[in-house]
Picture (tube, rainbow, N blue to C red):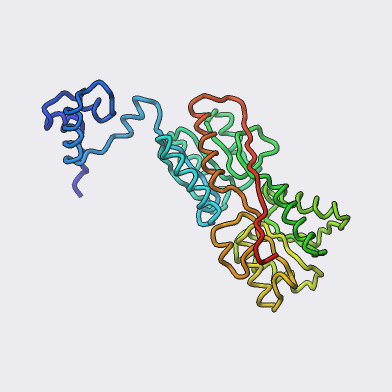
Length: 334
């Protein structure tokens, strides 16, 4: 196979009959160049198929203008919205992103961090698989700019942006109780993740306010996808537990739960009310439409990128934690 032959600024200079320095000023949009000359150079560059050599630019400026993004599960609609916020912010501020998907596997996260550091990215946005994380501690000691998205690291002083998960769990459960339900259960995610712990705290707080005992046997741990919710509710129904409502870790779990309830010929919300979490795009299109806790997914990405940019540019040295508001969206399932 023939070796790639890239057009260089020397090729453009030769074609335009100007110096290499003049071509460089035109391509980098410098002000000290004649408008007509600049126009001519840009036209020739386009005709020849010139592509800027980022590697050379990096060596000169010591900045790649690239941010690494590590997501736990890019197939999850929740992360699609987060990524949208990151992408829009990156374009606005003149950065590119490299996306790595860990598929919720901790070992993949360590590999992703290593690969991105080898690429000399300017900083990292990380939605980690779990809270106990040696690689995050390593980044902190290396002074690599990074921001944690959607997690709260209680034991580490790191930059992070996350939702008010305790409030989310509280308002979801309080609403179920206000609608007359008296025996809510929770189908939660694994407790090594801060959102699961914090949402449970909110769930517990709402029950305690009404003097309803919080029973461990009413808390179920599920995989945090549709299949996980479906399998978990099938297991719950076999246990013959007395319950009239369910607070689910997220909307995907809730959708799986509703499928299982329908198969058991239970009416939603009359027999069992269901509340989800996240307010992903299609939660309003399932039947019945899902009552859920809305979080600012786009802002997690957009504001997270801005926080990272502050670190990259050296404008902030102190650790920053940003907590985003949540709200209940009432639909048909509760």
